[in-house]
Every structure is written in structure tokens, then in C-alpha cells.
Amino acid sequence: MLRMTHDDDGMNRYREALVAACAELQASGLVNSMYDWCKKAGLKSDATVRNFMNGRSRSLSIETYATLAAFAKRPIASLLGEVAPQTERERLILRGFRAAPESGKVAIEAQAQRELGDQ
Image 1 (cartoon, rainbow, N blue to C red):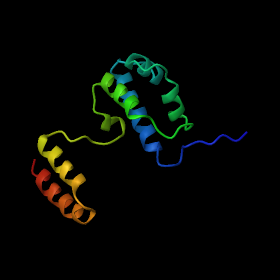
Image 2: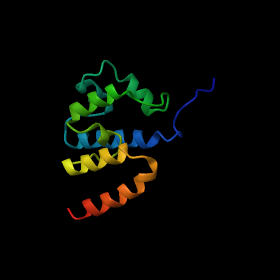
Image 3: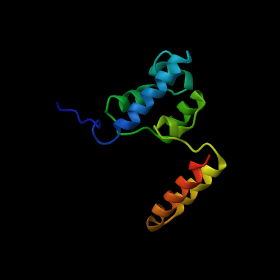
Image 4: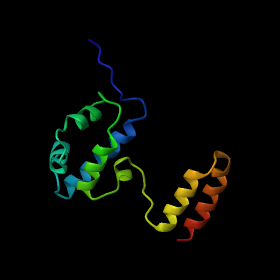
């Protein structure tokens, strides 16, 4: 029986980010493996994460990410491979960018680069 997998639908970048976060936790001695991370974080089972990592499921719930992130003491965005805003200024710029209509996003992005480039 042919089993469908979700390994080439753009989700690999999220899997790679999770693997990288786990590797950092292993290097710091907090966990021994992805399974260990799931267990120590308090997930009922590692099956959800395992299925996501091997391509059997397309994504993880925000609750799963939140649980893993809380244990790792890092923002959820870092587990998704994204850089989280660090300052209030960056958060405000990001909030404005997200709220802007598509036609205004290019101007906001250019302004943000000017604003944040001088830090």
C-alpha cells in the first residue's frame, strides 16, 4: 500500500527548524533526542511529533509548538525557523506590516529596513 507523505509540500523548512532546535537542546545537555524533548516538555506522546517529522502529517498544532517552546525557553517562531522580533520597536514595525494592505507593504518594508538598519 502506498502511503501518502507530506515531505515536499513546503513543510520541510519547519521540520528542519525543529531538528535544529533539538540539536541545540542536545548540545546544551537539556535533552538526548526529539523523543526526550517531547517527554520532558510534557507532551502525552511523541507520536504527533514523530508523524510530522517523518512526513505522515502535514503540521503540528500551535499547542504542541507552545509546549515544546515553553520547555526550550524560546519563542515559537524560533521552532518554525523564523526570527522573532527582539525589541518593542521591531514588534511595532511587524504589527504595522501585518495590518497593512498589500499595496503598502513594500513601503513599510523599506522603512523598516531604514529604521532597523541603524541599530
